[in-house]
Structure formats: C-alpha cells, structure tokens
Image 1 (cartoon, one colour):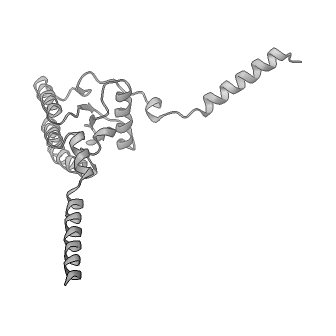
Image 2 (cartoon, one colour):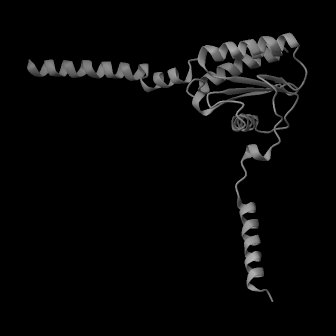
Image 3 (tube, rainbow, N blue to C red):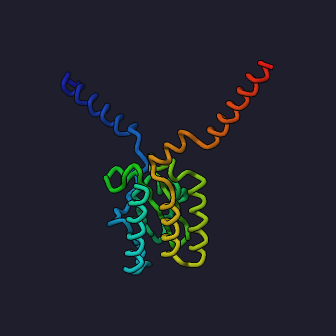
Length: 199
C-alpha cells in the first residue's frame, strides 16, 4: 500500500508528465535551425567573398534607408514542404535570439531546388505587404532562373530598400489616398446639397 507521501509523489509525477505531454510545442522550437553568422550566411559556399561583401554593403545601405534590418541565408536544400512557414519560423527563432528585430526581414534561398521565401517580421509587414513580396519574388525568380544568385539577392535588397520605413508606412496606411479622395467627394456633395436647398 502507498503511504501519503508516496501518493503525493505519484500524483506530482503524473501531473508533471501531463504538463510535458500537453504543453504546446512551437514549430520553431521543434526544428534545429542552423545559426547564421552575420548578415549573410552562405551554407553552400556558392558566393565569393566579394559577392558576400557586396550583399552586406547593400543590406547596411537598405537598413540606413528604411530602418529595416535584413538577413540573407543561402542553403543547399531544406527538405521542407511548406517553405514559407519554415522561413517564418526561422525568422521568429532568430528574433527570439535577438539576432533580428521586430522590424526585420529574412530572405532564405535554397539553391538546389531554386526555392526562396521572404519572412517579414510583425512591425515591417506594412512596409513589405503581400503585393510587394510578390514583386520581389518575381525579381528573384527571374534572376535565379539565369543562375545569377548574387544579382538576384542584390536586386531583391534594392527593391526592399525602396520601400518606406515601418513608421512611415504606418502613417501612410492611417490616412490612405483613397480615403482622402472619398472625403473630398463627400464634402463636395454636401456643399452642393446645401446650395441646392437654398435655391
């Protein structure tokens, strides 16, 4: 028979096992992400030292322009079915480590299967919305099709550099041009209606 302390210990172990088994595991915690070493990490060795330097310079220039820190990771192959989800989890993992900020982005290219994805962190979403991502994907796809990895990365970074800083994008979204046009038309209609009532 169990005494009171043995029963308590058994219940405690059962509770601990239940917590471990039912605790939600985040996708990024379940994967073993390779830790990048700098703004540009080429795990394939495809880029030359000069090309890496050029890309780092472009990233620093883009950051000084719109305050979004960018990272580039090049791998051989991921074996991932859902690359978008994988790269977003990768970016979240790096943000958790303090390597990428909430206004950052991560460009991931898999050279063997010519796949790529751009993960945009929360505070940069308004600066790099879905339609802009698609434009960047078109640039990447075109350059990678011609086996020009360095030029593809540089062109993508240049496209991102031209986008507004997160705080500017937020202000632009708050007062969109469409809203201003609507307000202008509404004021004109009200003025016309008031004049017609006086007649």
